[in-house]
Structures are given as structure tokens and as C-alpha cells.
Amino acid sequence: MDYKILNQTQENGIAIITINRPKAMNALNTLFFAEMNSMLDEIDSNKNIRVLIITGAGKTFVAGADIAEMSNMNSELGTRFSRIGQNVFDKIEKLPFPTIAAINGYALGGGLELTLACDIRIASTKAVLGQPEVNLGLIPGYAGTQRLTRLIGVGDALYLLYTADMISADEALRLKLVQKVTEPEALMETAMKIATKISRKGNNAIKQVKNVVRKGINLDFDKGQLLEAQVFGSMFDTEETKEGMSAFLEKRKPKW
Ligand code: DAK
Image 1 (cartoon, rainbow, N blue to C red):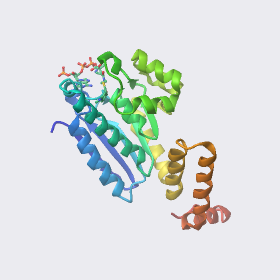
Image 2: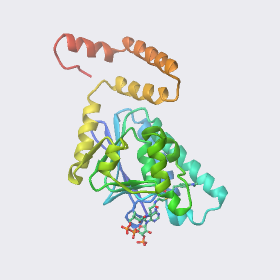
Image 3: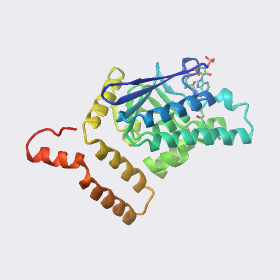
């Protein structure tokens, strides 16, 4: 095994996964997906975790799928490799709590697709983002064609996919591909601040925001509104909501 994912579960319910495979700029291979898959199962079943941050070790986030491994694939293996990656990235997207990609350097191809499965993206000024698959005679294989288009719109997504341009953090911010840009030294601190802020809100409320937004995006507007109303209504039976509103009326901080 020539890579490591360090999982440091913090006391405040913030978990950090650091992708660390320096020899190949943290490129994603079959072993990565197997490790990531079981780590996600572990994180998902840990009821103390409120936010997950994913970042890369060193100067790279992830420079894409492992080109050396892909170069030996036939179409059957390629489809399988793509489905394995899609399933792992779906698992990230479906985690019941918020996820933040802290993009410290190159986030290319599968690396950018990994960030797209997260809820929020923060980039260091050193980040470089792109979908360069067409340079290799490929298309994205981990739902990049789908998530990028839904996130930034058809025109900008096709521009990036056609040109394979590697863009700066500021350009990514302009495209709303990332939500914040920070100095490199401040990246993890900023990610932690955002995660901490989220972790102090009502836990069920945060989970339901994700649930309703993520499900609603795939529904028509009326069905999305109906889902919102049902979830909104269900919250009035929870201690969390009662405590949140009582605390406001009693001019104190909620105890949860
Ligand atoms: N895979 C494997 N090794 C990689 C790599 C990658 N994606 N990216 C970099 N490396 C390795 C290099 O080969 C080099 O190894 P050594 O020669 O030292 O052994 C080492 O990392 C350092 O790279 P460089 O010497 O190139 O470093 P530079 O600073 O000069 O350049 C770079 C950094 C990130 C601009 C450059 O390495 C680069 O362009 N890397 C490739 C980026 C890329 O094209 N990534 C997208 C990969 S395509 C699918 C499934 C998935 C996908 C598609 C289809 N199906 C199954 C259908 C997804 C595809 C992709 O992600």
C-alpha cells in the first residue's frame, strides 16, 4: 500500500480525511477507493461526527485518477473503475452531515470530481482546478460531467470540459465552483472555523438542510416544497427545535 488516509476525529465532532500519496501527487487508484470506502462507512456510523473535511497532504489535493493504473485497463475494467469511484463519491455526497473540501493544490480530473461530491469547497490561492481528461482522450469517469454541470451550469462546465483549462482559485470563485479562497497557511484554519460554526448549530437542523437541499435538487419545485414542509413540520416534535426556540425567547444560548 503506498498511500494513507489519515483520519483524525476531533473532539468537537469534526473529522478530517487527508489524502496522502506523495509519489503520485495523491492520484486516486483502486486501493484508494477501497480504503476511502471503508473509512466513509466508519465515519458514517460514528454518531459524534458533525462535519467532515477532506484535504490533500503536501502541495497537492489530488492530481486525478491514477493514469498509470488506467493505462492498463480495457473497457470492462474501465467501466468497473468508473463505477467504483462513482459509488464512493456518491457515498460522500450522501453522508448525512456537511462535508467540506479544503483544496490545497492541484484538484484535477478525479480530484476535482471528489470536491464536487462535497457540500462546500474552499480553495487556497495555490489551488489549480480543472477537468483535463480530454488531454488523455478520456472523459470524466466519476460523475464530473453531471455534478460540474449542475453546480456551475452548462456553458461554464462545457468550457472547462472542452478546453481542459487549469484554472486558479480566483477564477473558480468567479464561477462559483468554490465558495471561498484563502491564503495557503489559512486554509485548514478557515475550514475548521466553518466546520466549527456548523457544528454548533442544531444537529438535526443541519442534517435536514442537507437532506432537503440534496433531495430537492432532483425533484420538481412543487415536490421539493412539499418535502420541505414535511421535514419542517416534523421538527416541531423534536427537543432540539423546542430548545432552540425557548433559548431565543429566554435570551440565552441553546443547550444542545
Ligand atoms: N496519475 C498518476 N501519476 C501522476 C498523476 C496522475 N493523475 N499526476 C501526477 N502524477 C505523477 C507523475 O507521473 C510524476 O511521477 P514521477 O515521474 O515522479 O514518477 C509525479 O506525479 C509528479 O508529476 P509531474 O512531474 O508531472 O509534476 P509537475 O509539477 O510537473 O506537474 C501536474 C503537475 C499535476 C500538472 C501534472 O503531473 C499533471 O498534469 N498530472 C496529470 C493531471 C491529469 O491529467 N489528471 C487527470 C487525470 S484523468 C474513468 C475513470 C476516471 C477518470 C476518467 C475515466 N473511467 C474509468 C472511464 C478520471 C480521469 C482523471 O482523473
